Every structure is written in structure tokens, then in C-alpha cells.
Length: 467
Image 1 (tube, helix red, strand yellow):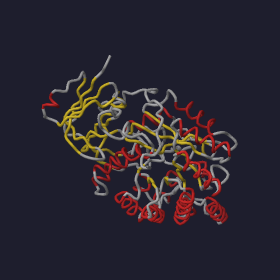
Image 2 (cartoon, one colour):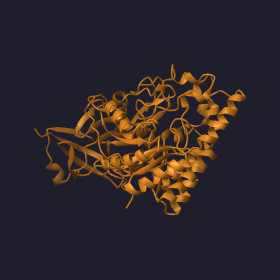
Image 3 (spheres, rainbow, N blue to C red):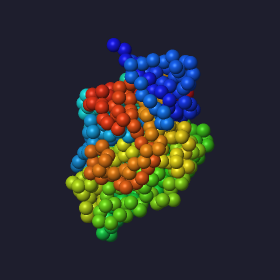
Image 4 (tube, one colour):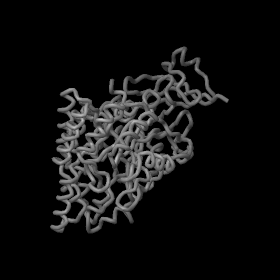
């Protein structure tokens, strides 16, 4: 049985253009687009018609940085693949790329298999994996080649978290050299973790234990230094580089310089760095713990430079780094010692709405919104044009978006499995109304109509910005 859906009358927005068009969906894919009101559009027929008059019709969001069920600091991220992907759908995101973790002493394969087991049959939307490489050795390097061949084409390394995920410069260089050969993309958490640990120890010795000190010890200069070092190591290796969760203007300056030199260097920032600041970390009564993530929130003046980087394309992507921990019982593990607060914020449900608000606030254009949230992450991680656009042949991952609906972001109404919102009380204009994943309604006029297991694992090609 072939099912056909027709979306009529909406303003279709992609990274490339905006046009009033009717969209025919057949067998999970986009079959045709025709300008609204033309004979070609009038000729389109379907069993189900969605009236999108007065609404935007946009590609489903691609969130290329999430951590569902991540073990961290003696606990686990509070969203499972089931709850996290359902919340993503509520927020207009139809594809996530999560991080499988290699434990030290284990193979990449064992880590990837463990993440497949967590996700399989549980996701409301489609998903892929990056691989966190914690233990670089000859076996790991060989495995990287095999993973690229089967569609896990990006590998994350950490200059932070000594004793957990940390890689030294030699290990980073070896992995970069390997990715230069196999076409993989190294994703870097760029902070000088060795130096930060010294500053943490000294702060705690001085009795500086509150959450705000998390931001003070993880200095912007140590993010910039590590960003610079990662860029130069990649240059030595002849490899491309993608820097994750950029928060400091000094790091943006390093990225801009590298791109001006013509190096294949890419980067993302996250909504928390665009909308929150050290003011949040300093909230009294340990409330600041809700905002502990790494890289940390920065003083407000960094925000303008991040927005500028998004406009000039020195930053190409906005991902969430969604890694939620409940305030009660999880964030509270760090009472009396900020270094024990689990690092991470909830955000997978809020990204598309916050970025639409940024359009209204004049930071970015509508098409840039779709570019940084849908098209570029899909291209960066080998999912385009299957994901990230609305075009014949693409997966019918489509969001009907009401640009006029007003909402207040709140833990009371969000669908993430976490007991607080990082954006509690924030008023935004724009809201998801209906979400299709491969043509199947997951959110229907603000009701969840999806189910666990609809989402399928999606292998990826290599980065589409590289020749």
C-alpha cells in the first residue's frame, strides 16, 4: 500500500531558498514540489492533505551532538534514547547523531555495539553515531578504517578530562593522521584539561566550591589555546577538523584565522552559549549547578562574537550537546565541590525554537536558521540530501512550523526527562505544530503520534565539505 501525503500552502524554507510550494510525499520520501496555485500544484493528489497556510514548512532539524544515556561522573544522562528522541521530535528535530563511547582498554567495536543496543528499537526519530576515541593504539587505528566503511565517519577526541576521555597530543596526531587517510572527521573537545585540573585543585583548596567557579577555572584562554593546538595538529596531519561546543570569542578568533588560511577547519556552537552566560552559573543556592557544562558558559560579551561567527560562517553549525542531568540527585552530587557536578545541559527540544527567536531578534536570517540547524549538519556528517533539505528524493522529514505561536519554555511543559529547564520562563515566538519523520506523523497538531522504534539507524558518508 502506497500512502501519499500532500502539504499545501506553506512557505517552504530551505538553506537555499524560500518559496510558497505544495509538497507531495510518497513512501516516506519527497516525491514532488510545485509552486502553490500553479496547475502543477493543483494536479497533485493524496490520501492525506495537511493545510500549512500561514505556516513555515521546513526540513526536520539535524542535531549532530547529543548524549543520550551517557555515563558521566558516577551517574547517567537522564534522557534515554526513547525519551530523548521523543523530546527532539517535539522540538522539530528529526535526526540526531549521538556519541558511542570507547572505554579505555576496550575496542571501538565494543563501544559501538553497546550504543546500538541502547538505541535499537527505542528511537522516535532517525539516528546515527559518532565514535568517542578514548584509547588510541594500533588496534584502535585499524578499527577507525572499518568504522568509516560502515558509516561511522566521525571520531571525537578530548583534550579535556584527564583520566577519563583525555588524549595527549601524540595520540591526537596519530588519530588525525589516520583520518587523513580514511576520510573520517576528527571532532575535538578543545580545552586544556591538564592545566584546568591544576586550577580546579587550587580553587577547591581555597574553599571556592560553588558552581560559578566551574566557569572561572575553565578559562577562555585554555579553550583558545587548545583550539589553536588542535588546528595545528590537524594541519601537520593533513586532516580536517571539527571543533565542538565553541563558547569563547578567543576560540572563534583561532577558527577564523585557520579558515582565512584555507584550512579545512569547521566548528559548532550551542544554544546555551548564545542565550546563557556566567550570570546563570552564579545563581544562588546552588541553582548555578543547573548550568554546569563544558566548555562552560562565558560572560555575556562572548555572545555577540558567537553570533557574528555564525553570520560570517566561521561557525557553521548549532548543535545542542544535549546531556541532561536532573538537579535533584544528579547535579546535587557536586554540593560542596563544583568539580563533582555532572557536566551537561538539556536542550534537544529547544534548539529549533531558540534559533527561530534569533531570526526574530535579528541575529540570523531565516535561511541561515535552516542552514545551521538542518542543512550544514547534514552535509558535515554525510547525511545530505537524504536529510537536511526539502527536495525530491529526500527523506520526508518535514516540520510544519507556526512562526506566530508564542510559548514560554519551562520544565512544566517540556518533554525531556529532566527536572528543570535551562531556559525556564523564557518567552519565544514560534512553535512546532506537526512533524513528519520519513513521511510518518510523529507530532500531529501538537500531539505525540509517534512511537519508539520508528526511528532507524542511519549510516553516514564522509564529510561533504571535503573534496
